[in-house]
Length: 372
Image 1 (cartoon, rainbow, N blue to C red):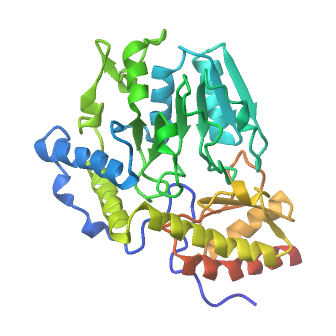
Image 2 (image 1 turned 60 degrees about the horizontal axis):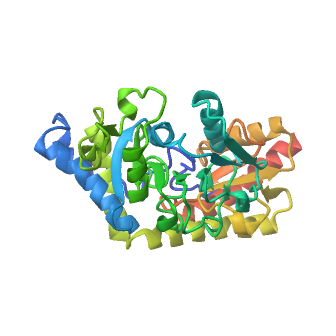
């Protein structure tokens, strides 16, 4: 039987992710629109985006937060182009975005002293292979594989190299060991459901020291330049962006941060996300035709939750189309480079009741496809 109750919010995309519960664009501070990002109000808004991010995340003293172009990709590539090349690099990859950083490092930056540690979708490479004398590049949460790092025990406290962490689907959803991370990047449209096009770059004092002591051998385009005359451009981390940001997107991000604060902070977002994962875990345990892509619960993501089904790829696509046509689940197909299956966002902007309402529809769509 076709279920009668639909999710109130059918947006389960893993990026851009669902807006926060109760979101209303009319609640945004639209006084920023039509104003220059260089104006007092523009710079103050951008600076607030940086300082409030640092405050809510509980970043250590001396860590800098900046708004940069081109989403998480821009932030991560900016960091790699500026910082890599002084030391050998260990790069860890277990899904498509991590593989993208491998390609950047080996084929675009053309670094030669590189160690690549890879794993298939659903698994992690052996992180203990990290050499503390080398720079480390890795994702914290594999958005397209549903696999996260369970801890940072493999990162040495007395490391000589830098750690560059793409944390775009982990920040605000997982406990991150800030003191072990020298560069952290993320984007507004992931965990907080913000708008796309802007990235966040967080630098430790150690990363800043590298920027001011090391000059990459490659030319840097303007939107990548973090230093001038051998010194960090501090303005990037004080509200002066490299290029023109969307002030509507800035207002939207500030709204998301206010929601985090109102909810009770990052710990409450983590609790919500883990509760959402528990709903999906219970369903998988009771359902023979669906499995987590990450079989090991210790490394299973609580944001981008990936599944494999006992269906052919064409049947999976048909199932996804059925759910979209019924307007109960949009954009839940696995990433194009990942194994065929489902990917359901379980971050805190998704309500547990909506996930619970979705599950009978998954059963219905699966049975409908199997019977055809």
